[in-house]
Amino acid sequence: MPGNDRNNRNDDNHYENLGGVYDFDDFYDEGYESDYRNGRTYSEQPYEQQPYDEQQDSYQRPAQGRQRQPSHQSGRRPSSSGGQRRHSSSGSSRAPQHSNPKAKKRAQRKEKNAYRNSYELHEGDLKNSSKPYSKKKSHPVKNFFRILIAVILVLALVINLMIWHYCGLVKRVDKGKRMKTDAAISSDDVRNILLIGSDTRSIEERGRTDSMILLSINKKTKKIYMTSFMRDMYVNIKGYYADGSECDTWDKMNAAYVYGGAELLMDTIEYNFDVQVDEYVYIDFYSFVDIVDAIGGIKMKVTDEEAEGMIPPMAEQNKIMQKQKGSDYLTHGGNLLLNGNQALAYARLRYVGNADFERTSRQREVISKIIDKVKKSGPLTMMDFARTASESLVTNMSRTDLFFLFYKALFSMNYKVESLRLPDDDSYYYDTTEDGQSVLGVDFDRCRKLIREEVYAQK
Image 1 (cartoon, rainbow, N blue to C red):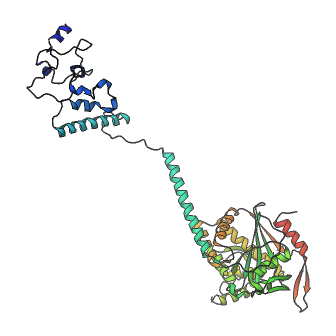
Image 2 (image 1 turned 120 degrees about the vertical axis):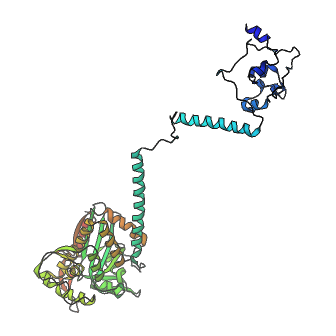
């Protein structure tokens, strides 16, 4: 019977026959000194204050061959509440205690590592497998978009740095003294930039301007207007001379640049045509040659008469640019691919057709062809064009203004390009000055109306 078996446990070798390891109930019931902390039993101690390992380590196994004497006088071990000795649920005995501290630490470390390895295998579903635990791989589609976004950001940064570099190549000059004109024709939707072309080799020479085109970008109508001002218009040149003194005289339109540079020319346009102009870009005709060559030339429809008429201006250009006599001459007309030298001669051609009226038309046509060619060009050609143009231009715009203007031009690439000439066919008459110069008299009211209705779309 279990009861009798328990009564027979007064044998001194009883506990040694069990392997020298005492059940926790036995350990607790015996009432050893290590069962108490500060006068309280383990059942009264907080669990956090004494881990089980420390409880186990606090017990020292009796030396081999020595018999443990019970603390009770009865000579027999007190019975537990169950009446039977409890055994571990697993049926296995506890690991032997090590008297050597180093051996004990090695055993604890081995047990801890075994538990951790078992946990990792279970979490990774790699039980009974030799492969180590690894994290779940990202989805390939997510990886693709991450890489794509990173590439786009890098490209955007590189492109912006290149644009900023090109803007730094443009020659910038300080804004000169201007006259307050209170131009009435203006709008936040329209940005006006005056394109000034001269047959001089440097802006410091301030020669007569053969090309004066107001480039107007209207973001509301999504149109770009190129408005040519004819050089022989008889206008009131009002503003400041180059030396800073006041200017108020009547002369041909292209004389304004000679008297006071770009600032006086812009004031003259504002005063006579009532349109606001604050920014300009200057280019000499010989830098124009490099720009056309940078995009590989432009295709133009040239008549036989125009091909022959291009010889005199081209002969002058060859001499100035130190090219061999007779270079780039055309022997016939047709749909031809013109290089920079030939395109410049075509734009300067004056004595074929209706004199200066057709010349302004050719100039606008050449600019339109350049814009179309750039639109259809590849990235390398665009970069070459941007670099060459930047090195050839002179402007009063800041580097930051040029940077944002470049982006404005990109968003305006699909805008429709329109042409306008001032004065138009119904806005001029032939006249002669007191000193005998042939000039164009102008109906300024009609010209202002054309600008307001066509460029600004204000009826």
